[in-house]
Image (cartoon, rainbow, N blue to C red; front, side):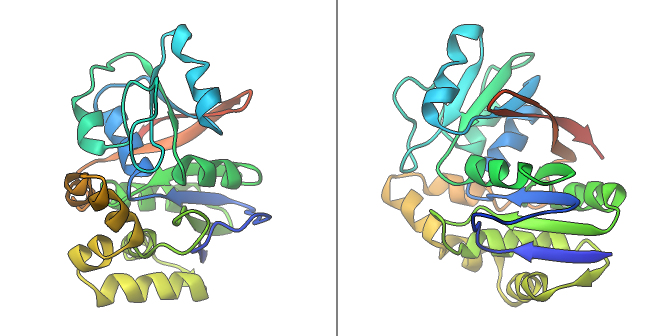
Length: 234
């Protein structure tokens, strides 16, 4: 099985088979947390305005702008906040700077699509191995279109739970994972530093919890401009 990792979310990327999108700080971790809290579905919107359009329809609206909860949103983009959220049985819609956009990029061509983080890395790897036909690809959300050390580390963690034939990007992610402790790779990343500057260092510590969840948010369908993720438990 070919194993591929795209470490920068470049426009025009194409994916013929299975894709795992990774935004460990914080969107893909938070999506898992909302499902753990009992959310019926997690919808990824392409932007904040489109996310807010679902609020009158009973959706909880979550996300961030420059790390913080945007005006009119019910929740920010923190996994601990999501775990404690009263969303059981409700749909949640999310819009973030990096993660939800990367998912929309992957969804343009992927045959199957799911969300991965350190929280569910073993479960996500197992799902991908089960679903893939010719290729397992990872897409890092990165930091505002650029490289993200945090996502590269998390991709390496998932790759460490897979077998296959890794290409160059995947080998690089594995090298980062095997060469650095999680606390170093994630806390020194640009994404972590940005959160610390706005008083959200606790969220960085929270995303480090390896394999705490067996839930994998899997793309179930599209509803207009939204990507609708449901849980696949492994």
